[in-house]
Image 1 (cartoon, rainbow, N blue to C red):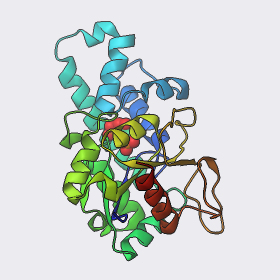
Image 2 (image 1 turned 90 degrees about the vertical axis):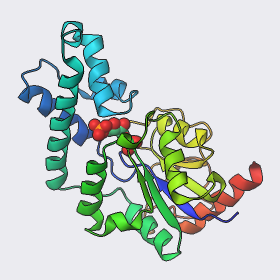
Image 3 (image 1 turned 120 degrees about the vertical axis):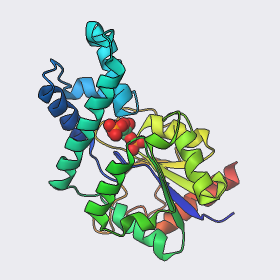
Image 4 (image 1 turned 180 degrees about the vertical axis):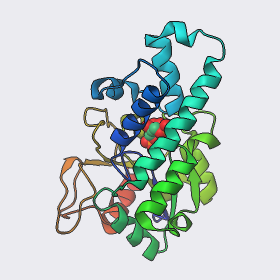
Length: 255
Ligand code: XBP
């Protein structure tokens, strides 16, 4: 079956933006008078939990048990996360740039008539703001399906988000490729039966990418070649649709 769709992760894949998320979390904690501050090392560890609300709850249960055991804690975490999402939106509005090659590959796929979808743990409003900010007001129309953290019970590394994207596309996993940046995202996509390209991001360099089609440092551009950490670019300077089709065909032959 020919490649018919690309399914994109968002955070770390479309944009390398976990530092914005981390700043939004820390600004929220400070605004609520909480003695919590997530430095880079702490955040790298907390990224082992997908979902901002779950991340806050886990951190509190681990490091501020008295507060976590208090009455109304779950509602408090929900309020914190709503505030964090608002602050994250303000940081996006201040300026955000897609990673190299992302806009080009999205446009190539669209011009070639492929379907595209999104499978992300983050909130829908974050996706809408990000796409509008980077690809323009009509950007959301590029994606036949946008599966977000609110629409599933189990977040990554569970396959739910990718299964929802496949359902929205009306395609089998053998007709699609996923693009991710983390080991947890790779696990989620593979569990849904998807061959997956990894573009490493700021916090995912040490992740386990076993089973990925290839691991590249970025999609790259024709005049800004990318580097493969695993797999082969077949002599190409950057990841383009032809290379995605080649990897897809090889994954079908290998299975
Ligand atoms: C990355 C995540 C998200 C973000 C924070 O999502 O795990 O939780 O870190 O965003 P993905 P929220 O890689 O699947 O795009 O606070 O909205 O969860």
